[in-house]
Image (cartoon, rainbow, N blue to C red; front, side, top):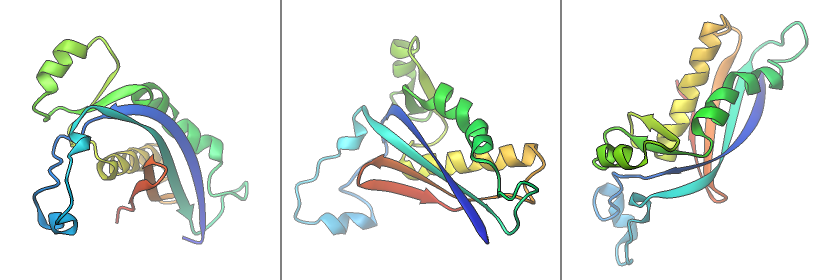
Length: 161
């Protein structure tokens, strides 16, 4: 892409990485000899920062890829009304049925994947790709990447194809 713009969103949300097991898998060797604590299997929250980058090889009639306002509008409802101040939970999480029973009166965002930063970045990427397609803009504007910061020192980026 010759031109790229990035819009940043912020939201607060809780989640649980129910699949986390730092003692198993190929990458466990990176932590050999270290006391391991699977903290992220617990219910916890983050002050998320979402960076959405879109691009185009040409500028539109207003000499922009797309106005920041339109990117904000495309994601505003999802960020503000679905994710912000919610608990993100995978419907496949073993605690999901009991969690929903006990906390269903609170704001819950149900997803069908383990809500890691990587998976959530892909979720936002796919959502914006669909929004551009619905608006007939998929040939003019491409989603370049979506980066989701969970902490000030940890982020995940999804770039698609």
